[in-house]
Amino acid sequence: MSHPSTSESATADHADRLDPKARMALILLLAAVFVVFLNETTMSVAIPTIIADLGISAAEGQWLTTGYALTMAVVIPITGWLLQRLNTRPIFVAAMSFFTAGTLIAATAPVFEVLVVGRIVQATGTAIMMPLMMTTIMTIVPMHIRGRIMGRISMVMSLAPAIGPTVAGFLLQAFDGYCRGLFWVMLPLAITMLVVGIVLVPNVTETRAVPLDAPSVVLSALGFSTLVYGLSSIGLAAESAAVVAPWLPIAIGLAFLVAFVLRQFALQRRDAAFLDLRTFRARTFSLAIVMFSLAMLMMFGFVITMPIYLQYSLLQPTEVIGLIMLPGGLLMGLLGPFVGRLYDRFGPRPLVIPGALAVSTSVWAFALVLDVTSSVWLVAAIQTTLFLGFAFLFPPLFTASLGSLPMHLYSHGSALIATIQQVAGAAGAAVFVALFTVALAASGTTDVTVAAPGDIADGARAAFLAGAFVSLGIVAAALFVRRPVAPEFSDASLSAEAEATAH
Image (cartoon, rainbow, N blue to C red; front, top):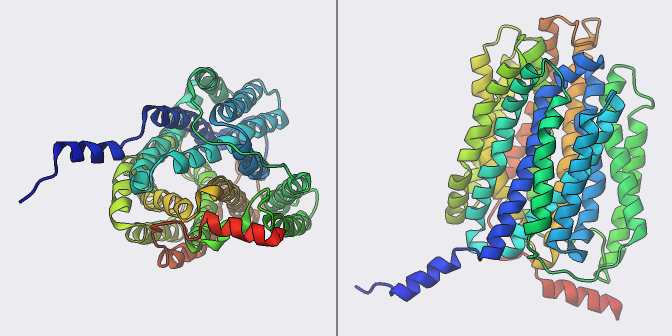
């Protein structure tokens, strides 16, 4: 029997490792993403306290989440162009500068409107950071170890959602309900990452001269902003507090997006698209987008509805709410490397099918079981199962979707995934809040601070019932996911198409 030589083993081991420069870039990008994710997940527990502290409604309070999503939906499409024009370090510094400035504004905000402005500035930085990390991963990590690397990344990224609500709960208790204290705690972390980025982040991506198409920027910003605004107004309309009927900005937003898509089709003919939609030629990418959208719809709906139910129906303090949400996030993080190794060995389908079933089962359980007498242990168990399902969904879908694209389209694919996630998240938060508010209004009030606990539970159950039906779409789509062994179309085919069009 022959055995591999020592040199062959060393070569194989080296092939499975990243070079020091690439490793440094990933570590710093992960640290920055951890900070922005921690900031985002602290809001899920803080919103009920902010509602009571500032005397606003649940529909108004959702703007701390959906305003964040609206900004990201506007900014993220620009990152597809930005990541091609600029290198890693300047983009990193710009992202953390926006995030740090937004954190300072939120920490010093005297009124709710200024707090929302701070969240919007924060979101601008987050919108740049997420596609930067995903594009960098796809550029510097070889295909045969992407599952493993993505699993490790998932573990780190999941720690923020795991500990964020718990940390927020205890901090709110320590600050005696002073919600701006969360931002004062976040500020030194943001400043530290900004300084470290200026000094240490290496440039690991390649740049190319791509013109910025001004009409595409305008159409994208108007389309996504008005669409997300309309979606977010659904909750206000349920309270009869919307400035305009939600269908009007939704229709206007869709019209702008149709014009945006037609513009991209024209630009693609000469390989100059602002956001290249040829990514959808990859079947795996398109299918993953559908699953991402449905999963994010439920996740955003969950994180805004569940804390309200726990605080005002089950009458739990903020620190207990954080602890209830802790096990699911921790499990999601710990499973990251395991799921990544399973992806490298078996592909996505054996992972996403049980993941989709766990998500759907959990949301159905919330819809059918929740009431004013529910045990917090039962809620924690169902929530943990929900996040177990997400643990088996997100890393395989990220890896398979971008892996089905040629390298030329990595930045566009990352931007599209992040944009559609945010629009879906805004839709989820808006629809869940609207259904919650409509059900609550039947009791004679939409004010969660004075509504009866049983009425709060009825509202939450109505929201989760809609999510339960949506979850069936994730289960159906999971049956058709496959692992791409190579890009599903090539850079050469895109170049040939552009050249043929030019002639």
